[in-house]
Image 1 (cartoon, helix red, strand yellow):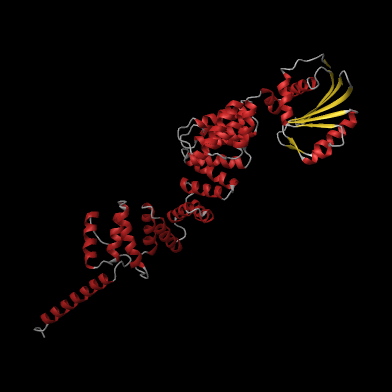
Image 2 (cartoon, rainbow, N blue to C red):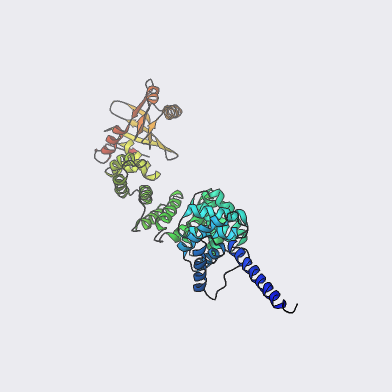
Length: 460
């Protein structure tokens, strides 16, 4: 029995060796088992060991995970992407690999490499595995924003903002997504928080101004746009918004200043450039600086020959630019218009005595002047209606004029316009003591005001 003891010990020892060897082989044939990690002192040793094992088994999950960890932490995105791309296949159906980490990092590395489709694929799977991870939600929201899927982006970004309320970029893209779907009120609230966290975010500040503009908060909007007018990137668009607000508020000099600041920028998108010039021309016209307006309209026509109503405006204002009386007739303040109308009335009948007895103005659209006219052949009460329009005058205006002639007991009426009369209007006056004078005849009257020798004029 004593002789058999050494033999028994040897047999037991060999059995243990075989058992441990079997366990090692089992572990190697089941890569990536949870809880098992490559043990090494530094990344160089980890890479060396991982590559050694992958040379033996390219699908060694544990080695791939170790390799991916090193590359991901070192931000070697191209190498990390290839590792996690391989792990995507290895992890499929393998419960021993962390499916969330594999897919999330595959998506994150793809995003770093601007491979948006692969990034989206990985992050969607990661989100399906774990819905409350901030990085996954934020980056999915960002991807949906870039894909212009704003409704989907809002879902992910709201979750990201809930998980990390102080993350400026999550709030930024959430605010911009809400703006894109025209939810201006909620967008404004979110963007304010984003700008508070990141004051240098000029694009979000500009979007806040747009929200306030859309919500009718014009005083707040104008402060933002005025502040951004000199910004190299956003300045032209900010100046366009600021000028438009001032133009709508009839603050024409401020509008001119805004637009002129916008045009000083060296790099302006052509569509913004043309829009600024178009609106600056409108502001110049309101200030009766017709020569400047015509110059701008000519510049616009050189870029876009048929931009909006530029051809029609040029046709109109080139003539106005060369005729001061026509400018006054169409564009000047009511007092200047009335003065001009008095001159037209007083010079209407050569060598006649004209006494103006009444003047009334209808909403700055036209002036009615009642006058007693005495010539060598006849005398009568005449009513003049001078209309400030270059469009077509219809029958309704003539019916109103005819009724006024009757009320004032005038013997005759003259209706003058800078435009034309419709066929219906002309038919209406055929059997009535009303004469119609269109633009050509008005131009002759205006031409004669300063040159015709006046007779004896009596004017109350």
